Image (cartoon, rainbow, N blue to C red):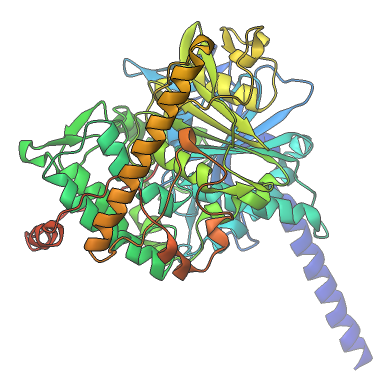
Length: 587
């Protein structure tokens, strides 16, 4: 009996040792992921880019695998940086970022070439397809259904990534991305900060230094209620559209009162209404760039125009082999509708709830392309103005700072208490696609890099002697007001008094009309950046109030007093189909 037990123990020990040796043999190192060349890219241009790509398994069973693409910095700085770039959707591939925005390559005249605005100039950049099922990432398990699950996978990816690339462990880490990544990034950032406070055994802390979110989906309440003022400001509103929008906004806000979710189908119909407003011509506005038109019902889904080139390229077997894609069954799609559908029942709270606590510990930059509809800059400005962080609401008296790149106006900055907001001119939902050098300068400044090392010129007003001082008169960020001469003080005072009197009359008149209608707008009060007075509105963060306290708030702007609104909207609903895609991908 004793001999038998010893024999079994020996067998078990040998088996355990064998499995350990197999596991060690399977542990990959950086060189296993080295990309030695890309099809259709010249050897000379390939030599300018050092990059790694492939799948990282998130569990021992290799059931869940995320595809990453790491591009090494061309000019590493003393304080080395690592940017992790995420596209949105949910379910949209970060190949968008690689080939169309912040990556090292772009298509020019249908030919791959070097992107002079690539963010790898001074930082390592990782383009990550996540969650599983997105892009070239894959799983043999059901798709993830909550932000908690997605965040757990992201942390598992970080652990494995630093095991494979331990030389990056001390780099300053920045999470960056756009659109629905405005939800991913705060969740991931908060998880990293919590991880660092109590690092588990066998893990390392992550040197998180900041979050950068472009045209991000962060705060549904203020962003859904931005569509009406946006279309009014940019000339997209029509007499026929407005009653429908007002009625749908009421339905939207009722849904938010019941439960404040990351997205609301009733609220997504606001976008559908805008896109349908001129569909009789079989054309519609591009929801990602209002300067452009598209065929209805795509309305921007055909844009950017390089997408067909990307699809063909990333589904070529020689390209997949070069990228170490380890299964031949993966078909690359820009956006996975199945990933998006799996998250439709997610009851996670919107990312805006996380920003104040993150801002206590690290910095955040929100940037907005001025021509985007779906995650427009007005919504971002509203959410900032209504958010309380580090003891104060909004930007207070902070003035916008002018910004030039190559001697041309590029946009405006606001910065206070760890938060930076950048409005970027001549740009769309995908800012780096339109203005790559502007986006590169912005990110380099956010990371604290020396912009004098750039191959192009740029300046903020704070860089030069005649900088605009912080404080003083507040200026509308979209339409700066002419300053009043100090030599006309009496006239200025009279003018201000008249403006205040008119404003009081309009507000009282509007409230009287709303009372006559039965008080049907229990909506949200917002304060654009240009009117951010500390003595107005809520004295605390709206996100910490019970949902039923929304009944105390009043909407300003975009509501038209018409007894026919409800009837017109009911007629519209009875007319049939109202859009094949109630929730367009936020890339």
